[in-house]
Image (cartoon, rainbow, N blue to C red):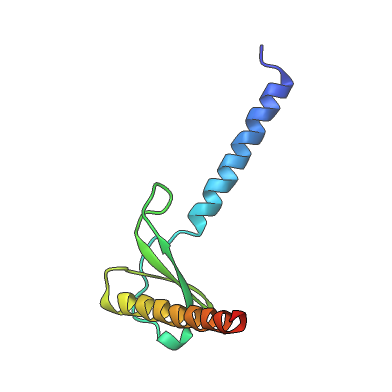
Length: 104
């Protein structure tokens, strides 16, 4: 016979696993946006790879108004990601040079 403790542990584990997986799925891109975002509204991005929970590869652009899921194979998406990376590199180089000058 199953003890009450064992049953409670199984129920608790099931609830935790269900909550975590449904939460992850809710944040997945399931389809791509139609149209194009202006570079000026994009604040950053993240990369989604297709998994059991997330059915497509996507670039998730972060804007002040929320998120937009884009097809990573499109030229405008590649260009936007490159633009963000170059901007981040400039900021990183600028801050590194400032630290080097102070230490000399």
